[in-house]
Image 1: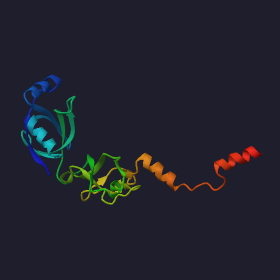
Image 2 (image 1 turned 180 degrees about the horizontal axis):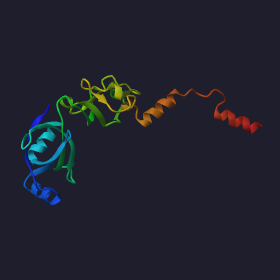
Image 3 (image 1 turned 90 degrees about the vertical axis):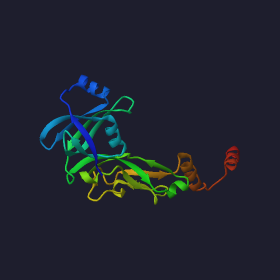
Length: 208
């Protein structure tokens, strides 16, 4: 779901001009795509932060420009707390786009209840889908994940018509026993050696 973002045109460009905008509480933006010329814009920091906080990937630009746009790239300050610059690309609702989406776990893992450790190996995936169907995140359902089991890319829950741009056999989530428990399990499964006891071997050696 997209939300509105009020933008204003800016004529001054360059690092000095951008710093002045930021001191005024504005974030510099650049809009491009669809073969049209780039447009330099700005928006209030609070509005940009709200869009990011809500997980919106597509916004309806209002004000100086009226169009749908995808948040293509976002630059943060050193501390990762303040947006410094945003790249936007023009899109239509039915247009297929490629985006990177975070992966999270959903459900209660039965293998974890038995002492297993759940590991998320693939934290983000590259997804191709229509602009109006970009999910905030992709869910890996772990409610059937047992010890020794894995969830692969092909098992992920995707929006209709979407596809992950990765090997379908790549492991996303695994559930395994902790190292020390795994070693104990292997040791317990090893058969006892059939033959003389160490003491008997020592006695036999002395008598030779």
